[in-house]
Amino acid sequence: MKKIFKLIGILLLLLIIALLVIPFFFKDKLEAGVKNAINENINAEVNWKKLNLSLLSSFPKASLGLHDVSVINKTPFQGDTLAQIKDIELQIELLQLLKGTDNINIKEFLINKANITVKVDSLGNANYNIAKESKTPTEPSETPTEKSAFNLGLQHYKIANSNIRYNDKASNMTFLLEDFNHEGTGDFSASTSKLKTKTNTSVSFIMEEVTYLNKHRIKLDADFNMDLEKMKFEFL
Image (cartoon, rainbow, N blue to C red):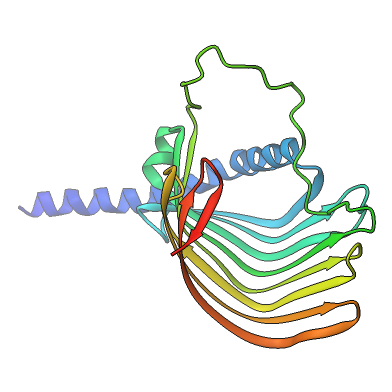
């Protein structure tokens, strides 16, 4: 019996050591992959100071964190900061990482202490339109019922302690959310599902130099029906 307990103890110790060591082998490869994926798909400069990959603190989930993230615009908003984010964190099932499956289910997604500045110039150009267009034209599929093998799911997201500023020069309008806290729970892997949200923030609204709202506190708990295939959201 003592030998059995000793064996179990050794196995647990080896497991803990593996969970501590494995991230060091994956980190560089993972960071390079994330940067390549971002640069291939958006027209902006994205950088961060630190990337963390932990298998121990959130076991049996893996925790990925990006810290001090910046998103800098290119033309026509060259050099403008679209977003400055202190922390971005997500958690996924450890087995999904090890298996390399095409079905990734994100358990938690967190954005903390973000400053986001959205701009629309007098010509109607928006600085958030940073997604690159596809280089190849879309062609009809030979099997239209066949779906992509890759599936990304999300169960819970949260934006905390953040500020969002929207400035539209075309309509001379400014909209500001300060101390913005919002979270939602739903199944984003399904075509239709229910989304439960909670929002708490301070709102300011100025149009044509007239202040209609000045740091008014708003609290909203709202449930939605989501139809992600048709991109329709219905208040319940």
